[in-house]
Length: 560
Image (cartoon, rainbow, N blue to C red):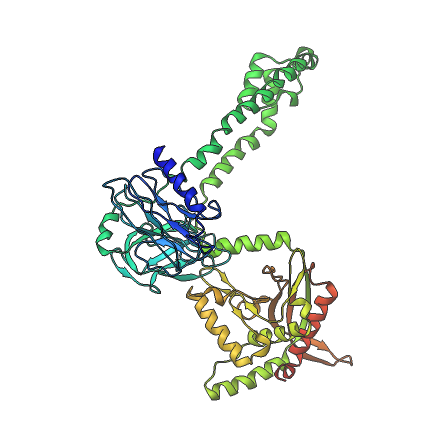
């Protein structure tokens, strides 16, 4: 208490010393020892910037302040500060702290991870552990809540530098390399190769500044003291709630059973003891049997007649069910990250977006002729072949530029209409469904579109897409016609977009002529537009399909 009162007295004296503090961001930093822990106070308002205590042995991490400074060992001061000291107890070891500009620029507190680097620097003198950094699972995409570690590229004891890749992380959409933010040594890997279901912010590794400190973390385990009491709080009141709920439920039961006695007496079923035993053994309700004994009494012969009429069917049914269940053979396949996200987003789409569908048949004979001519030029110049899907993507982009209402998304306050035409292309792989994005499709030529689609499709199959490869789309095209021969289907909108085009296969059809014996053959392709009715009205969707059909049936207009 005496020591605490001295600290309070010193802080009051410093508060009113106007000659010392000449800047709003002045920080007071004092010496600390095993019995006095560091406290960092802003002059004007202590509670806004940090919360520290003077409990000996309490492990603390240090905070970054709004002015841009943070606390760490051996860092040079960047901004001018005024440093004062409170004299510690005699013969107590000293450790000095300096102010420097942070490398990340966020608050580092115990139990929290840095959003960019996901690392927390911890200091402890009583535990015997040197200064170290806890590296948490980073958030590598906007929708990521957990991830898997594919493999570590560094092993324990290796030196790491800023920009070097520590490990490969499987996010909800792709496999992304996780880079190191600071120089040091990888002291401990807490979650090894193949670890799955790791929540964002959960500690996965420890780094230290000095190589000789690596061995001290051989048996290190992350602290769970903060997480331990939290689940016990809600579990404590739950048992009494269940007991209280059981009391009123049990009380009305005798009240219901008492009036039921006289009712059953009036409608009492009379049966011999042998008939009752036989009916009970065969699960036969006595109310379904009409007695032939004296006074309508049910006797053994009545039960036997009932069983003879339908007993065989009843006895054979359970045997058939048990053999059918026993014959089932199956295998449980764990959900992959991409499968979980696909399921979640598609379920959200069908539950929250009012879908409606518009289908039109397009004549593709001229499109096929143009594609053949362009591919001849591509082969002569050494370029890649142009597919029907590339032409469809180009036509969809030009139609979006012509009808911009379909290049929009819904929010609670407004409809956002995009000026960029970025089209996602659905790609099916062994790992799941990916939708890489082609940006500014309306401004690109068919050759560039074909190259980008093939490149991104290959990256999707190799599970090497980066977040920038699939984020930022405004419209989606899904083609099951060419690869799979599907004639027509309805696709689910990819939120937050408002439309998706489902492309079917092209087929030959007979077109009647003007005369009785006149007819021609032509190839038609069915396409279906799925629309969000909150954004795209029926007439607007029909206008977009009309523009799309015009580009497909007159493909030369796409080259203008």
